[in-house]
Image: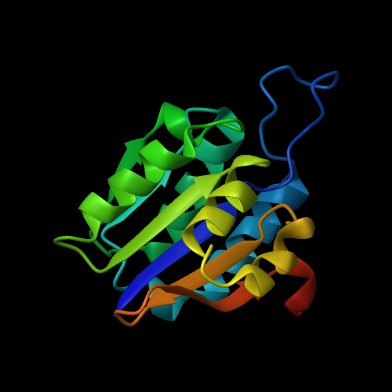
Length: 161
């Protein structure tokens, strides 16, 4: 079974507050909460891919922190920016899964919903859940050999503090 986790970066400051748009305290907390809920699933993750934008990089760092001693590598990909190249990333994901079984991607809107829809195009009904993708929201996809399926969408609001 292959697993692919797609997370939108945590809540970030507005550009008028800080042009670099780092995570807010709430963004850091919610990202850590989501990652902690996924801790059992993270044991199998071999790589974390993220965009070069600060808020995605900080979210990936929070993920690594929650993973603790699990050996995982990170890859910064410009194609994961908000208007990134969906087909390029899909090809890279396909190549990754030739030898590995679990990957975590941290990205942005509108890229993530477009990318998820691209992967799930065989089942258009599943893509309706992407109309609102909250910050720190994580989509958990699985492939049992018949194509990607949504396992769950985890949002910070769904988790008790």
